[in-house]
Structures are given as C-alpha cells and as structure tokens.
Image (cartoon, rainbow, N blue to C red):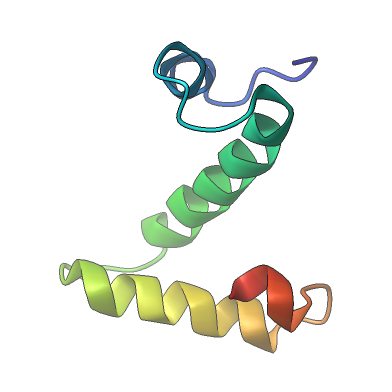
Length: 69
C-alpha cells in the first residue's frame, strides 16, 4: 500500500481479513470520500446521510452506476 490514507483503518481491514489486500485501497478511498462528504452536512440520521452521499455520487460525472451500487 503505497499511499497511507487512513492508515489505522487500512491496518484494521488487513488484520481482520475483511477484504482482500489488493481491494483495501479502494475501500479506503470510499470511506475517505464519505468522511469528507459527511463534514459538509449536519445530518445526524446515518441512513439519510448515506442516501445523500450516494445521490451525490450518482449525480457526479466521474462515477459509473455499477460503482455506486
């Protein structure tokens, strides 16, 4: 893992074998994007926040539908 974004989270995923190691950078990028998105909203309801996040991904030009699903 060349880039250490959320290094403790990466180590957590590796230690618990929650994802194949080659997929961990992708999972970490998604979590990082969500955390950045979350900082911009005061929404306390987690499911509403997730829905807003997914809607923002769908409305973007650089995200394929299969990636959001």
